[in-house]
Length: 411
Image (cartoon, rainbow, N blue to C red; front, side, top):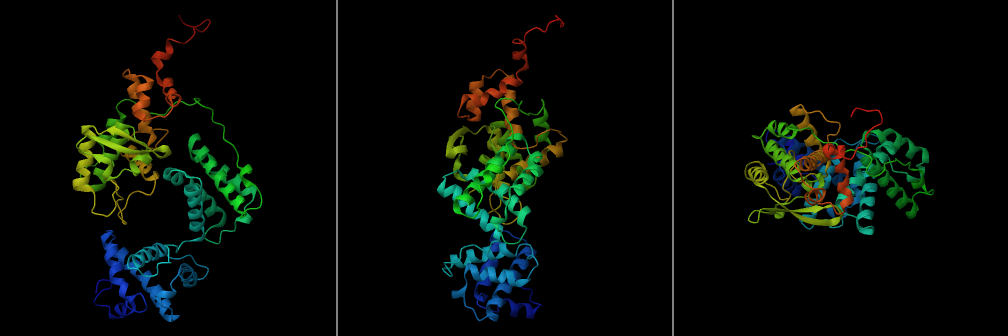
């Protein structure tokens, strides 16, 4: 028996009790294909067998298994007490197996919490009705999720109860957690969500107008970049013998040598690598694509990870999570975490610790070696020349020639 210990016949009988009994082994097989640990497999099987016994006790067949029935099961497990971690995720994986076998086709993977359903609805609005890029969804939805979590917890999402004070207090709590650009992104996401809910009639008042503004004028900031030699120090301290170490080293090279954005690294697939031509196809902002040269150092690191570190899995994404389920990263936050850990490991201190830090550093290095702003804009794939102007501020030697002598100053 694949799901239970042979020495536990009672567990074996319970595992095969109910209408899901003939799908338990297939479910275990799928989990093992996704490289879940044996302990995780046992825990997820326990969640599925609880659902199977629950259906059996109520004399419900698989034909009656719908999203509403799964939600009812989740609510009745422990009334008033949150479900154990991973319960809903295990049931979503189960429904995927059932649909794969042609069973319960109407059961979408919707064993979701109320907050997750609200997030899914907002994401659908952004992609279908507004036609926004997937990267925009990855940026907007987490902010909305955090707002709903702090306001409603794990209970029902009662949007009419949202007040202007809830929005203002949320912004005040989190405005200093991010850089000004990221904060403005959070405000844009909140306005979009509140405007959508108001137009749908879920919120009576126009709360989007209550979202505060954060002043950020164009070209007022100086790009944050690493000092000379810091990039090499970070790369030198990468542990390249483990699978995750090889993966992180390849990612850091893509950021530091080619100036990729975090989202471009996340969305990179095996089909985007042209080894013969020596180039990568990137999925950029605004649903655009671009080709960049795959320099030897970066190509060697990627090839080593793909051959010796990348786990066997069904996804075509290049970079895979270190833990099950073996899939691509969910969003760009994972790349920022890799950068933050790499900086800490190398003992490099910086006011900014995101993936864009390497992009700014590359542009600064090019400028100091005589590259023009137009050439930097081409490497960074800027759509408008004005976007590259901010790097003129870091060329101090050129700016000194433009400085006006201060009256009474040293000549």
